[in-house]
Amino acid sequence: MTALQDLIAFQRETEALASVAERLGWDQETVMPRGAADQRAEEIGALEGVLHARRTDPRIEDWLARAEADTPAEARILDMVARSYNRNTRVPARLAAELARLTSRSQGLWAEARAAEDPAAFLPTLREVVRLKREEANCISDGNSYDALLDDYEPGVTQKQIAAVFDRMRPRLVALREKVLGASYAPPVLNHVFPEAAQLRLARKCAMAFGYDWNHGRMDRAVHPFCSGSGRDVRITTRVVESDPFNCLYSTIHETGHAVYELGIDPDYLFTPIGHGVSMGVHESQSRIFENQLGRSPAFTGWLHTRMVDAFGDFGVGAEDFHACVNRVSPGFIRTEADELHYNLHIMMRFDLERALIAGTLEVEDLEEAWNTRFAQDFGVKVTQPSQGFLQDVHWPVGLFGYFPTYALGNIYAGCLFKALGEAVPDYAEALAEGTAAPAVEWLRENLHRHGGLRPPVETITAACGFAPSEGPLLDYLEAKFTAIYRL
Image 1: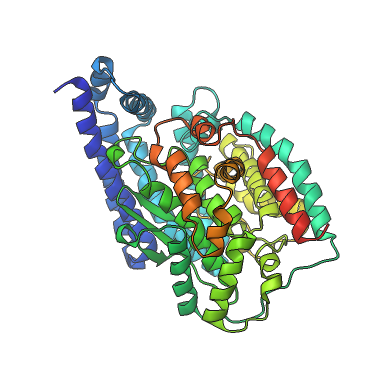
Image 2: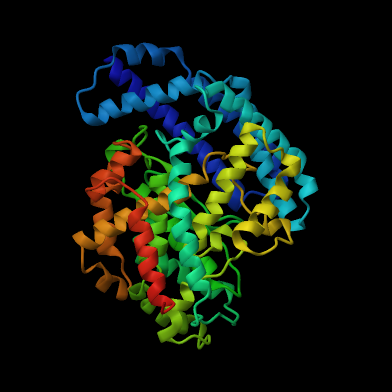
């Protein structure tokens, strides 16, 4: 065998083991008994030790030196293996395993503290997570600790670049929000009970409308909805609030976006570094375009209203007001429930706070006060419960520092993709009105999904759209949409 063949065969086993580790995480958040948390932490820590040893195996360096690529896919695989090897060899095996054990255990402790509104019970664990993430960042950094962590989720993008984008976005977002909140028209609010079982049945129909393949997936419930898996096994989760069916339905559509992306990748890339979504920003572009530009469009909400009446009877909002109801703007506390105008403001706040945590200019003991102060400044409402504030998201408890800004990048990428989609497939809305996103999904699969990690993130979006990504298309879309809804 050639050096390239040896490397790819070795990498295939590593990728398969990583899939097993991911499945353990899915199990922990869906069906694992709560009392098994400590045992699961040891299992995940042990598996991470095995994975770290493989990712730092000295043979990789030799294979990389001798391997020759004949195709763009092989060249990209070599580039990504080299990147992983260079990063992982900087992180001690002890630290990698310790982080895996701690963040596994932390997830359950966070959920308990969140449910009990008891931040004091969780702060010691979060303090330890932050300490280890700072240590990891220092190991892999070439100058900026936060950039080192960010690179895990959005390779090639720096905090300086993200901060500049946010500085350009904020004035237009805030100005539009003020116009909307000051409008004379106000969309109706749901005031009805929507039974759990009926919500879940309708959620499955929504997932099918957006192309989810149940032969290669399943839907379960979780505290914080997520998608898990790759290749031929990609699972989604959702949650149910009986007073708010949009929570369940749009969480499901959002996670379906992630799942359909993974399921649409060229099967030849399975168990290689390019057999996954290329970055979290690109991944989020798929969940957000499914959820918002397509799922909250007049065409799809028209179809959805009819199905909701069938499922729940007359729930007090007529067809003529339903689209506005789905897109109602309100400065709520919860990021995952935020409307499109407020969502990026949530991300901007978290971006600033987590940068300060990693830099050491903000300590965990002061995080709750810092969060509450900033939230009041940005949203004009006062946080009264930790579950509405710094305990609401799972990301920091499980060590995902550098992840949050990719949500906003995903919105930006989705804005660009939606513009390109509208030009390439002008009749996609007609199909949405009939309850299928197939034309839009097919365009996304051909232009983005099937390529997986073949190109770096920005190149992936540029190739799909035909132009380089920027925040302009997203802001133009938001201004046009909410000007019409709120009759400005």
